[in-house]
Each structure stands twice: as C-alpha cells, then as structure tokens.
Length: 147
Image (cartoon, rainbow, N blue to C red; front, side, top):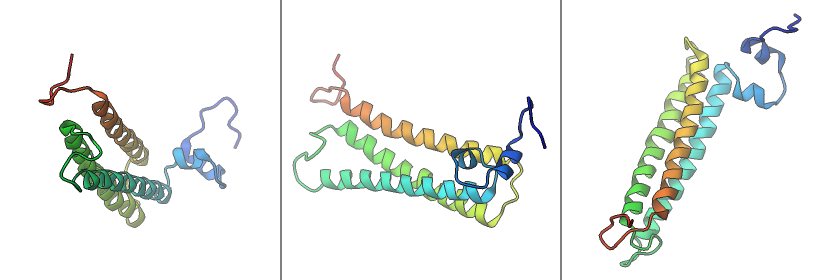
C-alpha cells in the first residue's frame, strides 16, 4: 500500500510499526497495549498516593506541626488528593483499564479508551499541581488567605 499524500489510518500505523516507538504506544488501538499503559499509570498513581500517605503520617507523627508548618488547608488538600489518587487513579485504572482490556477486548471505540487514559494522566497532574498552589498561599492564623 502506498499512502502518498493521504491520511494514514491509525490501524495501518499499528500494523506497520512492529518495534518500540512512541507512536506505537501513544496512538495504539490494541487492547493489550492500552492495558499495559493503564497498568503503568496505575503503578505511578500508587506511588504518588504512597508519597502523599507518607506526608500525612509524618505530619501526624508528633504533637506539633511537623512538615506543613500548621497549614491546615494544605493538610486537607493532601488528604483529599491522596484519596482520589488511590481510588480513582490506582484502583479504578488497574481494575477496569488493565483487567478489562486484558480479559475482554471487545470495546466499541478503542480510540476513546486511549483518550480516557490521556485524560486521566492530565487530571492526576492537575491534582498534584493543586497541592503546590495551595502550599504557596500565605494565610493568617485563622486559615484565611492574606490579601
């Protein structure tokens, strides 16, 4: 097949590219490849959630504020992002994304499966960025942001 000056379908790209390349993984519509990407994302999200859990435990280890310097709002945000990262970005992608794609490969829109993974990565990054933003806001003794 000669695809000069034509739009090449993704299915042709996946069949032509047999070796390791970024296009094989990023534009894949193969269920097994998408399942491996979901597993890698779930493992990374589990590491992020474990790091946040360690921060929570270190903060609660003593009687005085340890790491967060008494910033209660930042502590609440860390707890929320930890819970969301562990449930929605580790357990759900591992159970639905990985095991669902490995066991059952009959998904109607495989491109949407890949888009869902990309959106999950962006949402996790947004949650981690929110922790950085909240940590930088100066607050008074009542927890209200200063002007």
